[in-house]
Length: 150
Image (cartoon, rainbow, N blue to C red):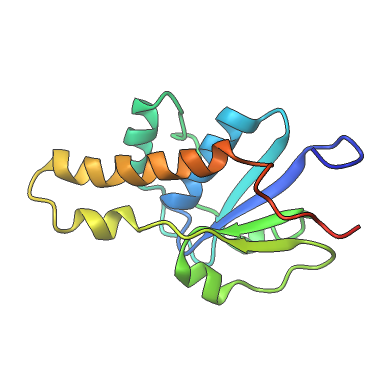
């Protein structure tokens, strides 16, 4: 929560808003909905990754109604934090107005990891590993976020 009692507005930004940023938004909504107003978007839109939806559902978080959004669709929202969850988004992250803090917390790309998988189960395990890493990060919010300037 912010000093005035409102929820922290956090944007999780990724390249295509198909997997990692969607998982982060889903976890934040599920675990931190009382103190965080989460959003996700991408520098591009690649559509919602069905394996990301599947492994999140296994963990009890339904992101099936999410859709891949371009950054332009949420640019009007005054975010407290923008968290880039992949290196490409971090390198391409545009400037945000006001006192928005930008952080980078990179996670591996599940589709890229899964390319070497020999079975569907191996592929799903790549997604599960990243899903669980993202959950561990989200569980620490807001405590690990740097202080905002007032």
